[in-house]
Image (cartoon, rainbow, N blue to C red):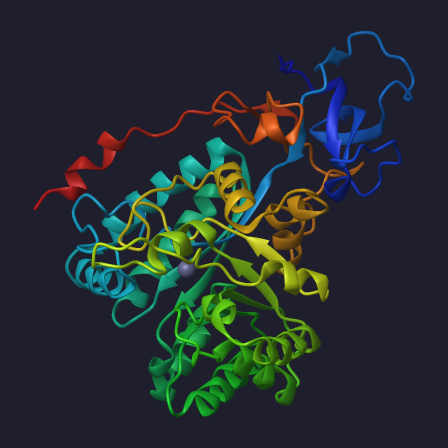
Length: 433
Ligand SMILES: [Zn+2]
């Protein structure tokens, strides 16, 4: 359907208002407008309302199919991905996930093991239409010495297909060893990475956060936190991060993931936290599939009654940047998943009610994470930008989000890519023993 040539024109595609900033057209109540796109030399030469651009022979009529920019997945764990067959979560709980993953890491995460699972994950993400991805890397000693060099090689191998970023991942207590943490921050800076920690309520949280901010400022790093991944109403580390950012005068980007406990807290506490998060300019990413899986997990024969996700609507209403992302895939934190951001958006729509109206929620899987990750040419469709987009069968939200869209067409630099998903059997030998 997409010609294997340098220049062509696609007519009669549906573009979304939130991801096509330069398009003036008649958008319907779902935010879609029919448009034509000219592609030349791998770039988008022009976008215009359907029928308004100069007539050209040979335009391909796509019959109103939805066309979105390639996805940006800003929170993943491709170092953990696909270990499920050899290390399942014994009971589906958060502690079960933490213990199982820690044991597997210590026993099995050689450079080769990590590299092969990472590459598998990236082939999935690429085939589904992801163009940029941030992964956390477990950086508990000695794993940081194994995983960061593997990541550096992987980023080079994948350059031009997926823009890769990495953030270190360790419990906030790890920051207490100041000399080691400084060495880690230097390693992260050398890899052009992002400084990340997991925050929860420890007595010296404020002091430790100050050290995290001090290292980020010293080495010019952006920050990425896992915060309050719990139903415990006493977990307020999101607020502590916002406060620490304000009093440290931090001006880098901060992305905070999860923030589950916020949905369980009293309104006044929530309002105070959201004020501070907005003032400090934090961005928040929700991981709806992982949260639904781990939060409110009961092992007493009763049914979960809470969706696990944070207050994304309230955040967006205050101008806080919000995204959704994949998080874990086929590991003890989430038994499923394939780094398919359409699946993430479909699940997020159901779990978080990102519909009726859809508004500008599609930004949460493209434009907003691109901004948080400081990517210039990703997340929107604009004239002059790279011709990186996905053409779906669906012509409306209900069509798009009802089927897996396994036959979507992914176009990179103007050419349809081969969308072959790797076979699970490739990893079988890593799962033995
Ligand atoms: Zn995560």
